[in-house]
Image (cartoon, rainbow, N blue to C red):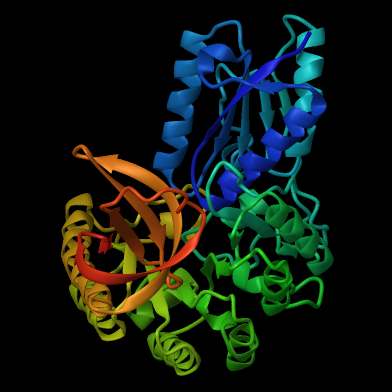
Length: 438
């Protein structure tokens, strides 16, 4: 009997890539994919554990699916069971961490062969000192127009607020030779842009002796790939040598997502971040020296334990000074099992929300200033899809620096999707620039 599956994915782009890899493995094993939950007898929750809220959502989904589909086989996998294997997963038939994901098809088949068996737990801890190969399921997320390719896994940093090293193990990298093979396959499938992702992408190659620039070059090699972009990076890895190597690749997109987290040195120290505000600013200056029009985006945590009003103002000042193209703002959420959760001087929810709102206003102005700099300029855009809004159609794509562009084609042009075109930016609104094809 053939079994059908449906995957529910929570969390980051790496989790999306993991789900794509699992999907491909299930299809190869003989499963087929249902469009809706009611079409599937295997329901798979690929969970996130970055915050308590992310676990709450996964647990809520588990309970809902169990109630709605009592006869389905339900799998919980991902960071939640890996980081918290002793949690109750009431309603799950199979519990698998991030390390044993490749066993899911095998475990599902065993489940269907043995009716009424107890829940199967297959959570194996990572080696505490690392040394494991890059053996995770990998597959570009081909459900999207741009291909997201996971080339790095794990983290060695152990920031005081983060559970990820416990959920993903230590740093390990896909060898460049395999990156080249994956890129060639993506090119054959018709993709024009590859976005490289990883849990700690800046540390790519630390275990293989290869560099992130090597991986970028490998992805840029196929003729039909026109863009290669990087996911989130740790700032201290972006030294001048790396930047100059990246600049040698004409297809490299100058968008750098450098996690800041705080503009206050004392907060960064408590977070166990490995840079200070002055060092961070120097890294940004170094990037702009090599890529003058680079878009710098970032993450900021507000309300970290002990963050004073003065600390917060330093963060606001730093955001203004750097002029980020976009800022992702996260009120601090205590994570069980991390040192920060036990710190004194926890900040109240009201204060965290107030600070997040203030910073959001500042960040929005920075984004507007970034987009305003493009008005009147002719820019190349990779067109990704056609959309409809208020009975009006438009094409949507991104500039090389990651800025979103809506393109209104008054003559109803066809065949623009997945092509690179040049448009003149006429205006901007909210989080995107506006252009017309006349």
